[in-house]
Image (cartoon, rainbow over all chains, first blue to last red; front, side, top):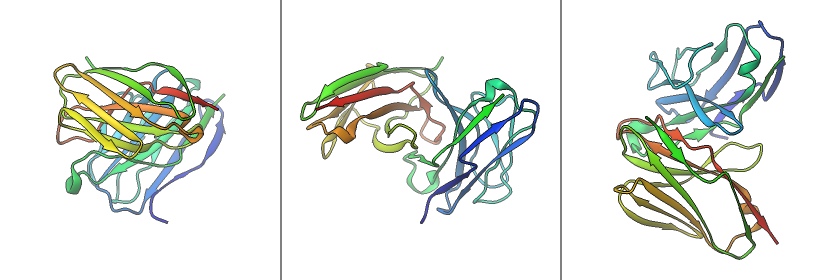
Length: 115
Length: 111
C-alpha cells in the first residue's frame, strides 16, 4: 500500500535520552516534512527537505535534527529529549515539482511522551 | 508576521449546513488549503483555492477572497462522520509546500 509509514506509533521516553522517529514514503515524492501538533497550537513545521541531500529549518527546529540521505527516508532525531518535546509528530510528503499544488500526504503520526 | 485564525469549536446537526471561516495574514500568499483530521488520525486533503471564488467538490465547498484574506469551508448535508477537526493552511508562495496551519476548528455533528 502506497503512502507514508512512521515508526514508532507511540513512545514514552525519559528526559535526556536520544530518540529517532522514522519516516519512509514510497510515492517518490521529492519533498518531505516533519510537523509537531500540540493542543491549541496546531501543526508547526520543524524541518523540511525539498529533495534528497538537502534540508531546511522550519518554525520550531531547536532540539531536532534531520537527514535526507535518499528520496524515501526522512528521520527526525531528538538528541537529548526534554518534556516540552512531548507531542504528536507527523511526517508528510509532497510531489510539488509535478503538481505544484502543495498537497501534503501525512503519515499516521508518532505520539511521543517525554518524562 | 504569520497568522491564521479560525474558530476553535463548532457544533451542528446532522443534515444541516455549516460554514467554517478562516482569516489569514501572511508575509506572502499563493493559495489556501483545507484539511480534515479525525481524532487520532492524520490530516487528509480536502481542498485548495488559488483564485477568488467558490470551488465545489461534492458536499464540501471552499471559498477564497484574496483581497480580504478570508476563506471558508462549507459542509452541506452534514453526516455524523463529518465530526472532525478542519485545518485551514496558507501557502506563502507558489514554489513552496511549507504550509502555515491554523489551530483547527473542531466540528461536532449531533443527531
